[in-house]
Image 1: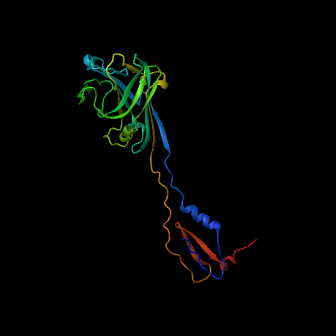
Image 2: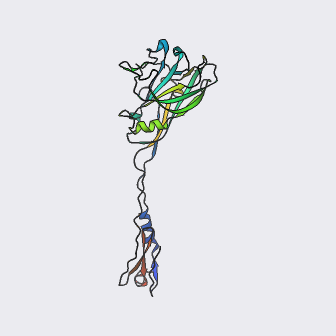
Image 3: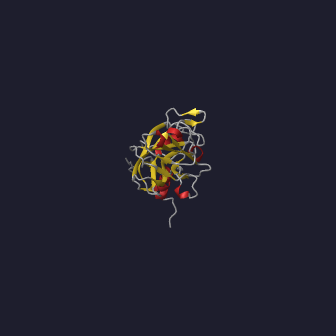
Length: 272
């Protein structure tokens, strides 16, 4: 509510002063910019392996990335990927998007398969992992990997070069925030959810492929720091008055005080 003094002498409001006060009242604090990183470097950012059941249950398939659904464990395959979001993204960052993209290298006769991305809840070593063991010295709690929540599910075709993207934001957000333990790595398993067939095989380009455009890639967008702005000063509930000439009354509006000046002060201001 605006309050003006009633005076026998006219009052003026000096616009430059008012604008200056307004500008000071709403100046924002610095905000953090969003950053996007892509993780696909096999020397430092991503490792992988395939695990297979049956007679291969103790074999480490560290040069292959493949999935297949099968009722016979001998042919059952799952693809594992681990991305270094521990060192690649600053601790305490807020993740707003995380997308995992893979590229089909070859596929058997089934034209489409439902492939899901799952969280892997325990750590594993790419050179030691098998269907039975996550490390040489540590078995999986469940054969075929310790799977957590399903993050996303997509239809994967059999044409070479087909790209498929999984939304894994929920997992990366928790990992980077340190909610999954001291290790902030992102661990994902690709699992074929469809029925068992001999034509369900899918093989994907690995992080070691010489063509970087077909490697698995995790694209993460995040910001680090505060995004707050300065609050305006509290609104004044009353106006003050001076008994002498000069400043006569203040106007209160959304916490910004604009000075009304009497004609006595105005008469002393230079003109021309």
